[in-house]
Length: 111
Length: 117
Image 1 (tube, rainbow over the protein chains, first blue to last red):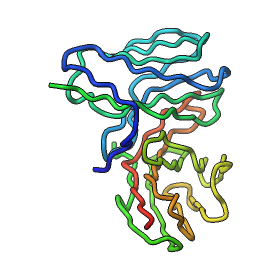
Image 2: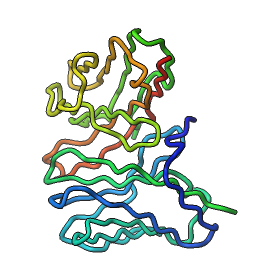
Image 3: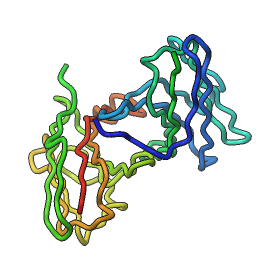
Image 4: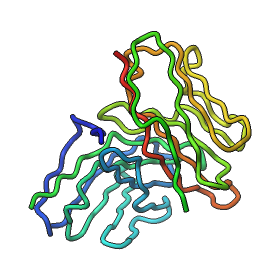
């Protein structure tokens, strides 16, 4: 499949380590956020979401942290696996308006 | 449950030619989206349909892009004439009716990669 992005910021982590992917969002009024994972040749896939009335939400091996003061979102992946290699996007939404996607970060898992 | 289907997966055309992409959303999903994803960037919304009506087409370059969803199910996106800068992946996504959830999870298709030479 085609590459999603050839010049994206890249995070390289060792298999088994924890990964932290960061995202700065643009609209202080945004109230809902999603992290997507996009593998080569595929469309974005939902990972985890968080509403603005929360600052942390956990899923299976993933945690999203929201800091509204500095408009920052992070995705933590525990025990990173080779299958986690992909491009990760954050997306923000302002009270039901359309989602605005960030530029993406490529996660590369080293054996 | 079948996912969002798109065709073709790849298309190569010369500038000034026309091209059309097709999308079949998940069965029962009322909302359909077309996104443009330029290499190295996140997806950008082009148009959103609610059933067969347009909800948002503010970022659609209407001089060359058009889209329709005549029966409220599948949709086509057309570019005529294509420019070099239209080279991108065109993603279709669908979500359930807004009344089902405040924020509807969007399910994406695999995309169509367009190369304009």
